[in-house]
Image (cartoon, rainbow over all chains, first blue to last red):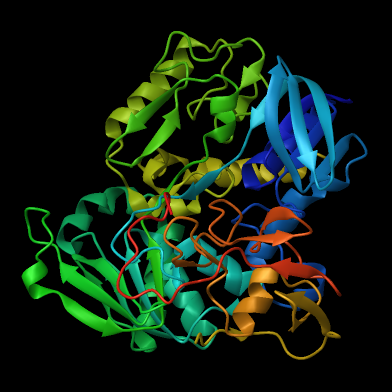
Length: 387
Length: 107
């Protein structure tokens, strides 16, 4: 049994920031991650053997380094390659790690398990050669392999542009980016984007880079099928009419060897489910979301002990306020903030990509309009907290 | 036949491991899936019900589409590191599928 004040599951940006915060308050931390190396998806590290100098851009690299500093702290125990598979009692997590297994006993548990791709099926989606946008990013960035030559990138959201850009930079051909959203309607997100100029600049930067590479980005288009035989040889794309229906009469077949599908991210709720938290189905965002106290009178089976939600931290941590609060008793003001921001959330999709410190998947970013600055403050405060 | 290719230069000492008894070259740090991908193999297993070919999907350890067997255990090829001498078996025999495969979850 490993004892710690705080057990944090997930060593991505949120988990690392939570760890730094807990360490700064004099607490001991057990940090577990399914991956061998910390970093999560956003700051995913290549295995040492595959690293090369200058792989990450400087600014991102500095942000990552600041977060990784927590790992070396003497009061932190990092358990890489550990899969949490049970929560047998309050504050107890059972994990499997390679051929070993063990338990962590903690006074508080922080779930920072992050997000997973929202898998949207279409005929042929099981064919080898259909990959998620995040998966392709991972293969290129940390596995140093380009998984095809001719790509269709299809789905919805800013990660499509990021993935397409990575593919082009790695020497692949992106035949088309098919974005489901209709550009004309995207302008309603403009106020949120203008409040996050950095995100806007990066988004435009990807667009410009793709334009230079001659990659068409078509909005109002969606993938309707991938075809074999055996593996992807062709993709079928069709327009979405103003009523939101797919117009199959105008479908186009495109010869590609790889389909990159990205339909946004949803929270990884296995662990919050294991911990007995309530969840609600969000049809618009297409996933289950852990309920915070703001929406539930009885948020967690073991509320006084468990903290849940990405980026939520040790109880009373100041920067969990207004986000997904921890599953302990929260002040009225935190509830009000949370409810208020939910009311204004219209899905400022692009704004979300910036929320790295809280590892917030894109659809939540409508709430984070004002908060991209908070997120960077999180990063800075957690980095500076150890001084 | 896939067109995947490695992006790193030939700096590291490659080694050999075995997939269904066949030797395969990998570089240090690579996963089983990447070594297979770079060797042109995208189908990593056959689905249990219909024998349809399945390969990498999430490529980050979530979906288990790329499950292969190592020493009797199911492992995710996308996160399992290749190692010298490692013996990997791909489950089932991937049938040459024509057309589409609608049941990722159930297959």
